[in-house]
Image 1: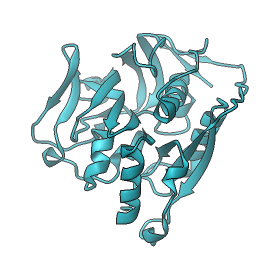
Image 2: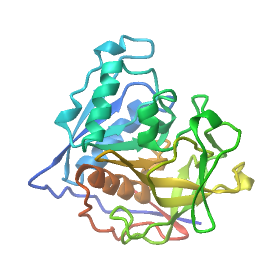
Image 3: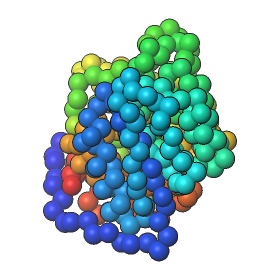
Image 4: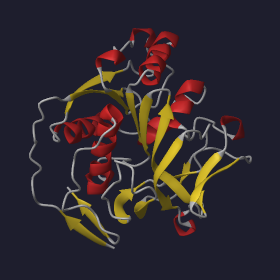
Length: 283
């Protein structure tokens, strides 16, 4: 595996109409204060988004004061994994997505809210938070298709952090159209054993969870979309930290996935420095 470093700066291409994006953060078992500015920069540098951030109270704080106006935005990007929101905020978010709002679940956001039924339908599968067989089946890629498997066991696991190869399973979707069939991703957590309602999934890409890195020996979902009412949900398991977020593959799929969640279309071309089947590319 060869690592290449892109040296060209990425210049914004300012669009006439920018989609309003809200990043939600404030609690996470990951370093949200470091990753949110990167998410914001990566989206804004495309020229397609106007990004704002809503930060919740700290752990055990008064969550009744957290009331974002979701309807002001085209898409919400979650960098949140923490205390439950208020019932009214949950209801407002459900309405936002169900009636056509976009939602991007980024990395550990799929660990959040194990007891919130509608949220789990939005993300389709998630991990940790005491998820188990009561949360729904496991979802893996076997024999050329997405397979859901109902059996006992915890939801959510990853082995050792390492570079791994992403395999595109749906090259016709706007998010993955034009990407190489296989591309190397930078050092990251390879999520496995995610489970949940596992409905309305369009599986875009997977990665093999190597037993040698304490993985499952399964092809695990990495990138997928979910239909929730009229809403478009893009779920990426990638991007554990700032270093993982330097991967051009992560950057491009985040940007494309957010645009698709916001508009149903993807207008960006695949950049020349996109990773190859055996080469990680960083920015």
